[in-house]
Image (cartoon, rainbow, N blue to C red; front, side, top):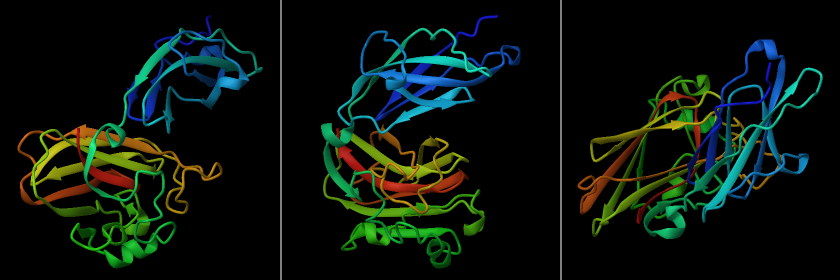
Length: 275
């Protein structure tokens, strides 16, 4: 029976590519899958030099890629219980788009898009203070404050967090706009999420936008706040999406972030940009 992986797909988003493939049947005695990557638009030879990870599942998130975008190609290779490698899968290539944080104009931001939670309230590890200060799961942050990030807790807890009362916490961000952007894009960068993943619901001035499905993260962001630390065990993720015409208003606006499912998320930065 063939041990070559089939059905490999690569879905690119800002600073990340999600790979999926068809699991081989149990009769093939696969021990794990090796994921190989190279910055190229063509096939390449898998080796230890381009190995980016291993997994027993059928999904892999290649994260933390360049903000300026790039081309990445991938092979997935099986390894059986005896350590023998199968033939590489067919190559798949993904074109990673450029981030609005480099192509657009920042209208307003909270935090710096730098892979750190450290400017946020209670960071990097005082998560118990969030539950103590917001026992009802409601957080209000006003952009008019002198230092908005200092009022914004570095974690947003969710129903999977026993330490925070197993509630869907909601953070309301209020801000003023002198002019409405003609092509507004919201950027939400996260330093980490938990292994539960989750669903982040978003309302802009009372109107729901498409929920963001959170990846299953490293679950270290409650204690560590810098993805540059190679030992931190963080898995960042990135969400950038266009806001529909009419959602934003001249004057006061509010955005509500509700972690409806899963465990906490750790903020890197949030912003509204003119594309």
